[in-house]
Each structure stands twice: as C-alpha cells, then as structure tokens.
Image 1 (spheres, helix red, strand yellow):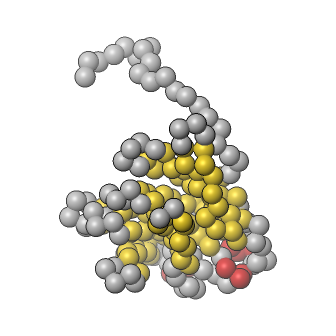
Image 2 (cartoon, helix red, strand yellow; image 1 turned 90 degrees about the vertical axis):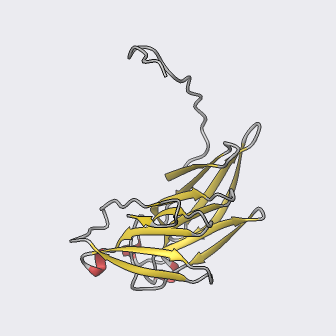
Image 3 (cartoon, helix red, strand yellow; image 1 turned 45 degrees about the vertical axis):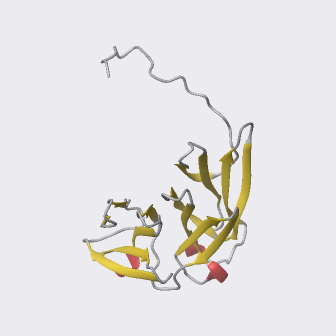
Length: 192
C-alpha cells in the first residue's frame, strides 16, 4: 500500500438505519453479508421484577433491505456478542434472567434459518457481557467476568458432546463493569 496524506479519505461510508436497539454486535458471513444482533432491554437482572419486555433481535442485510427476526423475548441484558463460524453459522451470547431467577449466559445459534436458544447455565454463573468466539471446528467459546465469585473470569466452551464446560480463570478482583475479550487460535486454543 502507498501512504496517503491524512486529509485523503480511504472509504466512502454508507450509513443505514437498521432498527432501534442497544448493545449491537456485528459479524460478517463469508459472502460479506452483515449480521447485526441487538437488544430491546428488559429490566436489569438485579431488579428481580421478572420483567419480560426485553428481546434479542437479529438483522441481516439482503440485496435491498434488512431482514429482522426476534431471537428471544424475555428479561435479557447486555452487553452481548456475535460471531460467525467457519461454516457461516451465526452464534450469539447474551445475559438472560428467566423467571426472575438469576441466570447468566444464554446462547443462540442459527441453524437452517431458525434460531435455537439455550439458557446455558443456571444460578451460580452470573457473569455479564459474555464475549463469544468460534473455534476452527465450529464450536463456541465464551468468556465473562463473574463478580459474584470474586476473582474470577469464567471461560466456557461447548464440547464435542454438546455439553458446556466451565472453567474459572483466577484473575484478581472483577466487576460486572470489567470488559473481557476472547479469541481462538487456528489450533482451537482459547486466549482470554
């Protein structure tokens, strides 16, 4: 590449309004089709009111417009994350508080045009802001701080049998405000 002066624009940005929502996450399919997940927020998990007015939505850009679907309705909370695997399958991680019982990681995967959801863990794994990455085998890996356990970042992976494996990483004091990131190398090893 040739160096360009600072006042020369590299891109011509096209701005489109997709929908109203918060905590968006973006991923691209191999054909460059953008996927956006976002949230209509329910009550905060600590509110304990059992509010069901939230939703997680997905928008996919087709040739002329955005196709919007609802992944799940309920008391959801963010931030959330999205990743597309090597097989072009979309995966989403978010926080879901079902029945006003503190739960945490919820996971959704788009298979054959339908979203399959899984409230992955029950009480005791209450992290916020689960980040997701997909390994070379197409299986999801997530990470998040768990302030209720003190000095823990939780790492979670879907194993070959379809069960979630949970591992605590001792990391020093954590807050629900702390940010976590995760990446999977070509050999399938997680980096958090």
